[in-house]
Picture 1 (cartoon, one colour):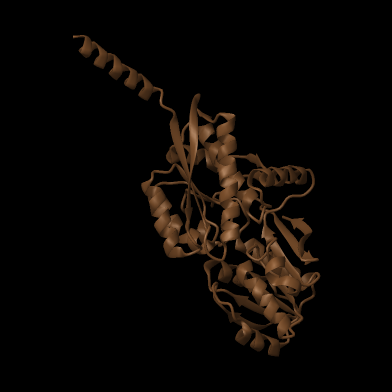
Picture 2 (picture 1 turned 180 degrees about the horizontal axis):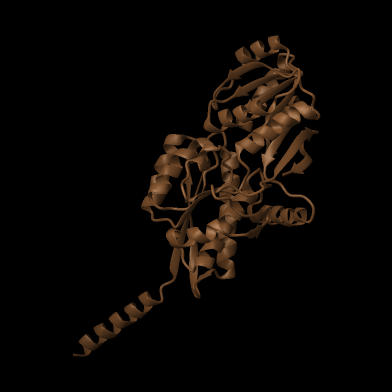
Length: 377
């Protein structure tokens, strides 16, 4: 009889513990932590983990109940097939939301999987216009898209750099082709000609053939749609071939690492690029504080998109709190109408899920280091 009473008491204790068990909210992050873009993917993952750790340290609550946030981080290797595989893995793990991916080529196919599962996805880096033009209600991004980025660079090339003969190269990825196409649309003007259009791949290492063709067209500016891992060696080979044209690109090349990857071929004021995002004025102090905290937390400098990953996690968490729920169906409406003050500035989304009034930062390189030209909207 005593044994029976003991078992009943033990069962009651377990039931009480279960009733008060802390809710776990899973947020997935996907980026390339292997392959040629691993330095950017790790930068992003570190920022996601930093945001999660800070929210947990503050005591994150939903509807008055303390909740533990858990980061489920996956590697897509910048490969679309790997990207869709890990997307399904996160869906099967029943995550409550996704922050990622880095590359447009992995983000776009993965977004269909998230959409079919009814999940919310916030991309901190994808600029391909196709991503939000699919009209998936749960797809958002916190950076300006290629239409703005490429078009702005095109106009800058013509109006400010006074380029007349322009060569365009892309890496055949969703991102590279997209930003190159939008750049081409922006280079209209009297006497302006696109004298060459060539392409390479995201994994190529020898660009001699296409650069030799381009040299014959005598461009005064070369635009590359692709990533820094290709742009750096390409600049070296341009120098070897005696191509002295200015070099432009989008956010994929606009990294702290480009100076190291290109060496002295990066030149002085030779490269002009644009990063999707950017702050100026009072917001610069907020960003500087983030960079300091990031360095203290990770031991590494911010590479490119870490602040946008951090804000993506934070804005998702804020929408959950506003909805008092981590159920995507319940916090999605809150995300659509949110106005969040992040380290990257004010985050609000238009009906398509694009960031409203997204900023762009123009950079050049001096002494092998990035040097800001201006922030424009």
